[in-house]
Amino acid sequence: MEPTVGDYIVVKAKDQGVQVIGLTRGQDTRFHHTEKLDKNEVLICQFTDHTSAIKIRGKAIVMTKYGTVETDQ
Image 1: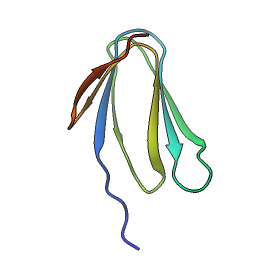
Image 2: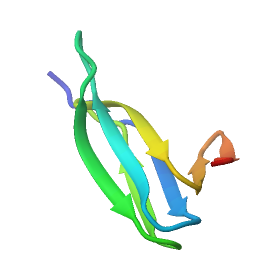
Image 3: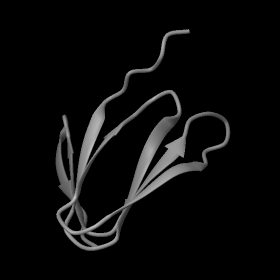
Image 4: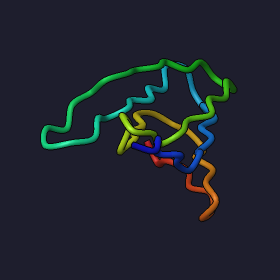
């Protein structure tokens, strides 16, 4: 089976304590990884065989190949 090579996103924290949560792929969607970012920290994330979604809590800028989104919270 070929590995899934997915898109990347970039998350830049605009505030302390921004959470980036990876969610699993498959029948049951579960949290599988969590990172906490401090203000101005940047995390580069990739969708993979195990990661089908990424949830972001807190004030952040999210950059993708489709554009940039800023959270309101």
